Image (cartoon, rainbow, N blue to C red; front, side, top):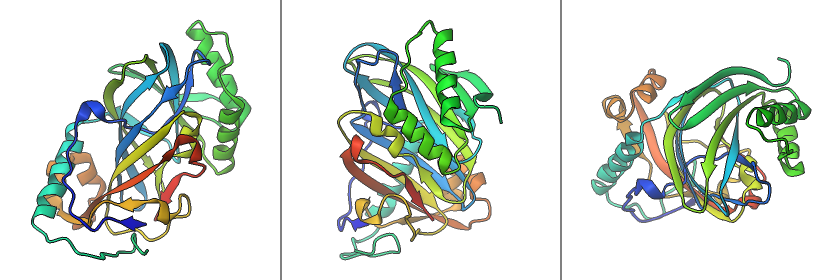
Length: 292
């Protein structure tokens, strides 16, 4: 993991955030989908994770898009709070301003059912969410095609690349996929944030599912854990830049930040908060971000 040696001034312009990392299947297969920036917040306590995402995407032409997000366990999905991102950034800034930058800083993170069973469906603001349990790639394709028929689309939009990715996820033990439908055009669209909560023995952020998109991306992740992490079996640690020295926050500060993340960290007297950054072509992400 590369480590920035200077204190950074973090600011969030919400309309420019490209948050969320999903596979995207445009109803019009001729349209390209772009995700120039990605940011998210992950809180993980060692056995359960909260993943807070919003979406900022644009397309080469107008189209509806079916997004798919793989998760390691059955998720609870609800509307998220955009204020959590702002509060977390302000908290990092406040703590960094009270510290002197530590040159050469190093941490453990910085050493140079039937196929297609829908278990949850809801409209959350502009989102049309379905949580689906899948056991094989053909089941995934069947689910997508059946869903598209309900929207008046008869064309198969599941590319061979997407089928291969779903095969990989299922072979790795993934059964749960969240589907969301959005409408895109050439102008950037920002939607309400969504919050996913699920069981997982490792911190998880899906990257390879997004390799079906076009162009390059810059990914910024707000990471909240009881301790710093040392094992990265997915994306290599050298690909991740630690943007600043991790800051320690108290339970009281965490409660003000996000009540559900506070509850998630119930047994932790304090937690560590920091920002990781990854950059590259979407097609270059052939492994997910996994850490513990």
